[in-house]
Amino acid sequence: MNIRVACVGAGYFSQFHYGSWARMDRVTLVGSCNREISKAQATGLPAYDDLDQMLTDTTPDLLDIILPPVAHAETIRTALAAGVKTIICQKPFCNDLAEAEDMTALAESAGARIIVHENFRFQPWYRAIKVAIDDGAIGTVQQATFRLRPGDGQGPRAYLDRQPYFQQMEKFLVHETAVHFIDTFRYLLGDPKAVYADLRKINPVIAGEDAGYILFDHSHGARAIFDGNRHLDHAAENTRCTMGEGLIEGTEGTLTLTGDGAVQLRKYSTMTMKTLLGPNTREGFGGDCVHSLQSHVICGILDGTKFENEAREYLQVIRIEEAIYASADKAQKLKV
Image (cartoon, rainbow, N blue to C red):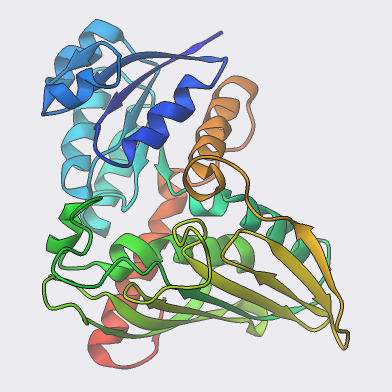
């Protein structure tokens, strides 16, 4: 059986979605919709600028929503009304928690599922780190740190060449970018119990914050730190591969993530580094994580494997995000 997939959205990041679907044996791409139909036509698929018409003509099993949050709710409503039973929706999921809750409930009442396209947890380095943690390679985890340094936020043309709407986002670093690491830290360490945030805007041409620190209090005493600054870079030929560098530190060792996607293990009180995952050689964004996520969804539909990041579960990411912004506003640690 092949899953019939239609896509709505044909902006910059959609290239990774279309490219991934085209590589899957058990998928048939049936259409592309975009308000500028020339971009939909450029995909080589049957092209539309009217979503209702595409859904009527193509009857997809799955709709992939590759649009900014402002368009999510209307698109989900249209898909559900057309009888689509599986939806993948890009992050950030909807405009806010209330809207995300409404869309989740609407999908559930229609007997449909929404999987949020939160792909960082599918990057091969975080999969390798998760295996190492679960295997006890570093003992009890006490601290995790990620330094986000993509180096793309300086000057008046920041983000314009790739994703220009970034400049107008009133909530930017956390809502658009750090949300990846909210979910990744949850994947590695479980849900945090409390957060503290210190956020700031450095580039005056953008509307939202572009640098800051976030402290997460996780279960069993573990702490995680997100240290983000989109102005600064890190030592990598491709600063968008990992977007930065990380450490996961435990009682029996330390895992190091470098900017080339390699993961190394140093056991406690030793100087020897063991390579658990070599430098990234995969094509596509972030170690081909888009393909990993979309393949995961197809396996869930056809093989019955458990879905990660269904909308109901993902609502907790949005709750944590809202607590982070409230913490920054109040300058105090807040329970989630």
